[in-house]
Image 1 (cartoon, rainbow, N blue to C red):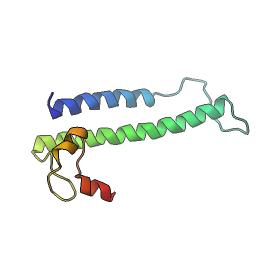
Image 2: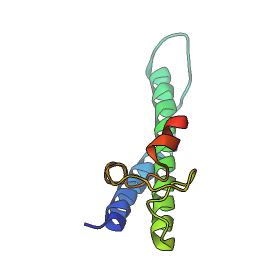
Image 3: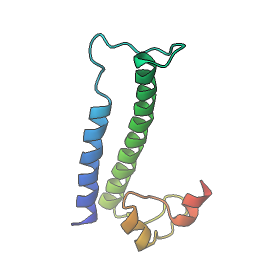
Image 4: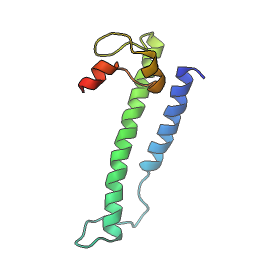
Length: 107
């Protein structure tokens, strides 16, 4: 399977998960933090966690889209920050990466 195909498959998986996570709550459900831990508090904590997960997934989709763009324009494998080649082991492990190990470690 090519890198583009792997990225497309992963993108589809993430998009489906994001759609599931961002479905509106059922009608009549309430979310509230109270003095006691109960259904409302548990639901509120779960929604906070879901929101963080959805943001992470959206970021991963953006990374995949960037990698697909780089494949299309011929710059795939080149670090966005320093312009050096990204090592093949890193690309194999993280096909959506747009930064080399050195630049990624800088933050």
